[in-house]
Image (cartoon, rainbow, N blue to C red; front, side):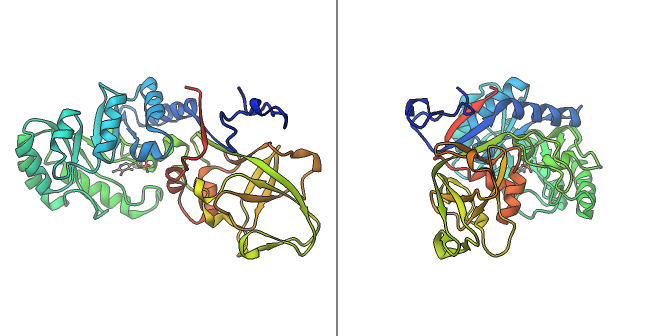
Length: 378
Ligand SMILES: *Cc1c(COP(=O)(O)O)cnc(C)c1O
């Protein structure tokens, strides 16, 4: 069934949402697979892995992993052991790494599910080598994040400690790979090259999504994209080479007209200056639409697409609702029950994030659990 078939207001059974839900998140698995292939082609002969931490950036671990497996992806990165266990149930034969390493007590779980820790400190290497000698693992060299990973001067000691393991990967992570001009990239690449010399036999990985597009081509043996797979722009300020994966639509719950001087929403941040035609939509900040896209404060309003017409959000985002101003659009375009596009081809993840004063990563990972979810192209 297609959401484009508008249900008549009386035939409730014809709703595209199973239980008459008012907001619909469509996740295009074919676009996801295309994005992975594009990144893989760009990075070849390096292997293209996929970062699926945080429930595949909020899009659903299982459908996302199945689509990527079908596209040819064989190596996945998650953050936590719990995510690793879930991922192992989906992909019996895949190589699974955990960015958070092997926190104390996680050993039995990691071993029984064949999860490879990305070891993040000298202590952790020593502990894991004692607990799980000979097992495959990765090592993180910290070249600038000051977060996780062994400092480059300790790379030699790390190599000694890791002798008892079967190191499969040495990796590092960019600080500002979305800024190709940033000198930090050059410094990090140089530092990593020195540290890697202690691991001449081990495969190496550096690039996240934006790293894949750096002019340095730091693809090494394996790349680790996340955001770009899900349609985020890895080259901010330039056209997005990725296909949009996520579409968010919400239904019009009510249409109404207000007079000049009447206001909309909490704290009356928007007041009509002319007779205005409004539509209330059934989604709000509890669904992951940031409160920061509320209108007021002079910022450019977010626009939603109503039958092809861009209509601005007016007033504050509430918990379960937003209001659109349809005054500029022809009066026949909208009916109660119609779906309106909030996020998709017109306003992408990056554009929505910019309006909300955040990053697209946060928009994706906060997509709520309340939407009806539909996977297409699988
Ligand atoms: C999240 C993460 C990635 C993926 O980054 P994107 O910018 O989403 O491509 C790669 N490596 C590490 C260490 C990460 O934490």
